[in-house]
Image (cartoon, rainbow over all chains, first blue to last red; front, side, top):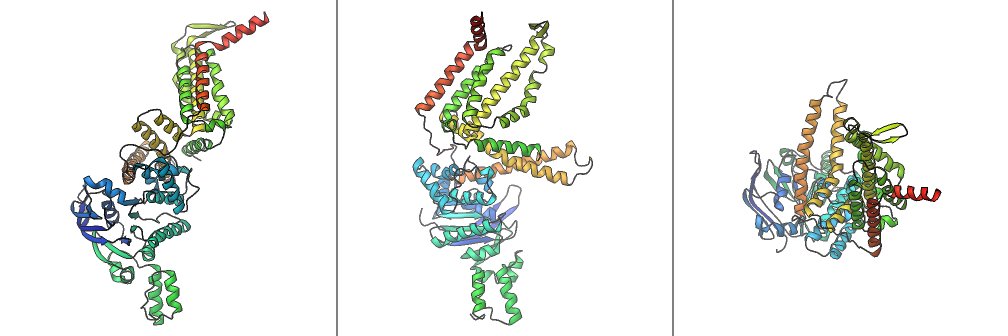
Length: 279
Length: 270
């Protein structure tokens, strides 16, 4: 499978009760790119994500991963390529201990126990969860579970990782830790990252590109600096601009500064402020 | 703390005990599983009026609990908590079987009472052996042991998932029970119909979670077989443990050890 690109073309899907979840969705995710799929509740984000590794099959259109179409016959290859971190880690951590859970994927990939053990240890170290190996998932905190769930996917060394609401239900410290981890994966450039989220602050900080979904259709697609400063567009899809954007707009409105720099993160905001608002 | 919370906490405590590091804990799970199976077969194969010949079997759980540094008080409380089930099973025996089987002085004791006590002793021995096995091996360790002993993968997988999700289901039940309690006053909102609805919701939630769980397993290459990375080593210590205890169980099953001891003692005295 060549270079981990995702091509979705004319994708449509309806649930058995007739609810149309996706309609004519098309987009492309390149190698090493970090893309956030954002939208309000019920916009179709999770449904779209579930098409990327074949949990749901396209009713209309196609999904290609690295040139291979998602179809029943290709599911094994697709799932080696696209890893999925579920929203609720209790859905993902089903083995008796963290170590066995993280090693579950590598063992299924045909690795020897020694290789799987090493892959699990490496993945746990990568997420900063060394020391959790022998823990029983039932007695772990939500943050620990999320890190273990991410390690379970990393241990398989997929080429694309899909995160479903990666920081939901986490306390600020663990949310920052998970965000830092996703940011680190992005910097490494080895993985394509797809995040489904309605947390625009998070998307602003870690996405190269944003896909805006509303009622199962793509309303807009582009860099966050462009989309997140389009307040009417966001309002139209039932979202509110990120906090930094809101602050910057208000500051520019009150002080007459040039809104040019369009900061998305706190760091960019401070830099723009220090720069006197000049582009 | 509700009864359900206490139950989950105790289950968790059993698991935590399994992380102790003692010679018993270090034994291969297969050794403990096989030995416990031999023990259980021997205990349950006694006749319905046998009480005395079963008593020496208390040696095994007591020795393992002592060597494994297990808190006996905790194990005793667990036994008492489930004892009503055993009482319920045997409580009708005295009414159904009134034939006098033995005399204590002038007091005639019916077969029903003897078989009732036999059920209680059997219950005590088998339950404490199972508790000690889990507290020294962990439930997952037992499952791994069963798997390596050739128990079909599908059964072991079911056991593993059942045990893992007891906690999740228990927590969901507690949350729903709390939500009900917070909005129920006097007798309103406490009826059977409400419990029925809670059970219905639990069933739907369980079904939905099972679907998500299966997806998560598929996402990581699950093909029907759960491959476990844990390495097991069956050493001479495990062979000695299994064969030694099993031989002792067979001897205690074949010979009425208390009776032989009694004869020996009375022979010595006379």
